[in-house]
Image (cartoon, rainbow, N blue to C red; front, side):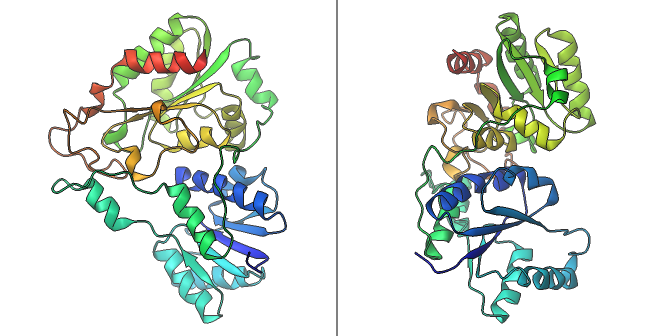
Length: 345
C-alpha cells in the first residue's frame, strides 16, 4: 500500500467516461477508507460524485480562467495549494499532458492511463482487423491506481445507492405504481444510434402492454421535440428532456427498473446505480472496452457481424464505411422488446 494520503484524479470529459471512473473510485475508497480523492473535471459532472465518501470535485474551467497554456499554469498552481501527493491521469489528452509537465517540475508523481491506442486501432481497422476483446476502460483506470501502489478489485457491488426523487420529479412522472423503463434513444454519432422508426416501434409495443411507465431521456431542442411527439402518441410515455436538473435526472435514473440505451453516456449513468441496462450497438462494439459496468454481456444487443464483418469500424461511432449506414437495422425491434421485458419481469 502507498503512503500517499491525497490523490488528484483527472478526467475532464466525456460524460460516459467520467461516469466510468465512479466504480473505480468506489472500489478505491472502500479499500482505502482514509485516502482523500480530488477529481478534476467539469462543473456539470459534480453531481455524479456527490454521494461518494472522501471524494471532492475541483472544477476545471477550460473555456474560462483555465483556458490555454497560461490558464493551465493557473490551474496547476491552484491544485498545488491542495497538498496533492500524487496524480492519476485517467484522461491522457493534451491538457492533462501539459499539467503533467507542470507537476513533474515540483516532483509530484504523475501516472497516466494506457488507452491501448494501438490495440484499438487494430480492432477497428478495415484491413487486417484483430477481433479480440480488449481490456475494459474500468480496468485501465484501476491499473493507474495499481501503479500508484493502490491495488483494487472491481466488484459488482462497486455501485452507488439509490437516491430519492425530488418533489419536482414526482410531479412530472407521478408515483411509482408501475415499473419504470428509461429509454435514451439518441447517441452522439449516427453510427451508433438505433433508427428512430425502429425505436418508435419498440416504444409503441411496450406502451401497448400498459404494464410499464416509459421515461424518455435526451438533450437539446430537436430531441425534446421528437420525444414530445412520442409522449403525445403513447399513454405511458413521459418526455424528461429539459424538465430536470442533472442532479434530479441522476436520482430518477437510480430509481429505474431497466434502462434501454445506445452505446452512450446514459448506459453508464444507469450502471452507476446497478440498474439493468440493455445497450444497442452499431458500428461500435463492447470489445473496445466501453461496455457499461457490471452488466450481463447478454444485455448488449449487437449489429450482425456476419453481414457487416468490419464492425467495429470505430471506437466512438464516428467512422461509418460506405454500406454500413444501416447496420443497426439488423437488430429487430422484437429482439429489443423481448430483452427489455425479460429484465422487467
